[in-house]
Image (cartoon, rainbow over the protein chains, first blue to last red):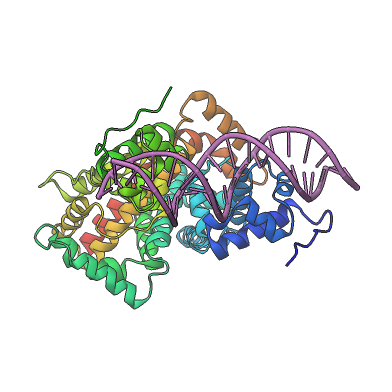
Length: 219
Length: 219
DNA sequence: ACCTGAACACCGTTCAAGT
DNA sequence: ACCTGAACACCGTTCAAGT
């Protein structure tokens, strides 16, 4: 099959980013190369460099595009509910686009990404009564938790949800020395079966929300 | 300068992993290639494949080697203190070896890594009075928090601790539309100056510990 | 077994050139 | 300006061979 010659001026930053997201979601971060991406767009590799100075710049644009999707929660809802909405949206976005996690782990932020959602999150916390420093800390804590939980979920659980692979993992834990690691071996069923997925994320988020509620009462 | 011919049988899995850690710490994850690592050991690239089937397997060994350093906390200390010790040790390990974060973001765990520290962490929680499921959830939450906070710290703050770069970042936030993002602009000083580094990690950890304490009282 | 050297099928990116 | 084709300096890994 011969390569179609691309009609001129069909490329754009947005079109390239869109296609990059498709490749990342379908085939993973390793599969996204400037050459493969260009080929899937029907152009030569160097065509992309008209729109992005480097692969890093393209990945930053992919990250910003995905983050712009983030929910900023229901206006007027109680602060816990709104924090829950925004945090869960971030968690799900990361799990749905695992490559995004790798971008977070390799590229610094410029500072103005996800501005809508960040503004909503921060103003929710301020309105709830947290002082400036506590609101900033709390915001970051929630983001860190979503990022950490999603990283774990994607690497260690996603695609292992079938009974067979869970059973194998549990067997692996149980085969460890029960003398050296009694609790680990004892809790093997819980570690592989319960502490997975969004339930694990929610457990941690509610713990954080509870701690924040407590702080608010003390103030 | 001519390449030294390596004396035979000087290589070993441990020696290779040790050198890999040095390269990662000194020059970062991108600088670690099988070719560069081999050269720094004075051997040809293919020599490494006698000890590791692939670069992935080598990275897994690097991860396991670093995780084996983890503190398992002071025996007999109150449960909060011990959780704090173990969590902080993980956080610091990740910040000191940023490449480890990228390994967590790209490689699945086999399940038996950091078994000593995990056992200590889980048994501390069980002894404190948490039921099986809650202990498993709490353990994971703490690990996720350390991983998320370290990822953020390494990508967005480390190396930006000098006043000059903080000032620039703050100026960037403050240059955003104060009409569209009033809270974000207002909290710029807190976001760049306070919510950084181990203070941010500790804030979140204490929130989680507070939530756990609360759960224990309710039970 | 342990290690080498050549080779293969890739990368991201530079450069000079075409329209 | 937008895009191409050739080339450069890399990758990880296979294969056949040496000791």
